[in-house]
Length: 162
Image (cartoon, rainbow, N blue to C red; front, side):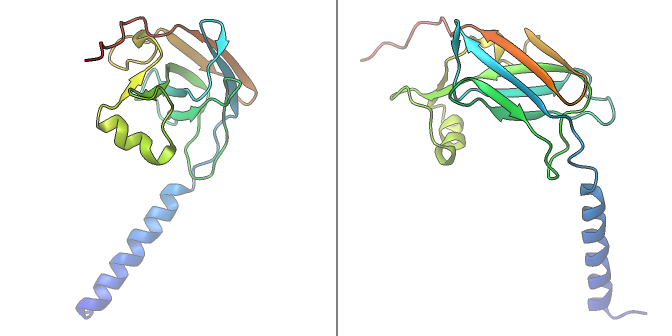
């Protein structure tokens, strides 16, 4: 019988080996590009999320990226991610800004402010709410897909200042 510390070491090596094997399928997704406009203007700093229409389809995962200053986005092949594979996707677009300043928060502050409900979405809810049927969809065919999405701004009244 192996001493207890050797059994633990063997188990640890097995777990690490399985983890590395599980990561080996990443980076095989398609390069997908596109652009987002809101009310006819390029939408900078928007979050673009692709989620599989059929989440049970084996080999198809979702991904999230941001638009640049010209409203363009790119999903690139990354060995650390599963990547977008050919298939049909629901597309959600949002642009979160600080409720008091109207500015897009820094990457460091984004999650904390979002959890604290200190951010407002500038995009109409019908394009960003994952709990309703998506207005936008996309079919990824392979590398070289280029999508153009047009959204409208949030029309709800701004909160009244006290």
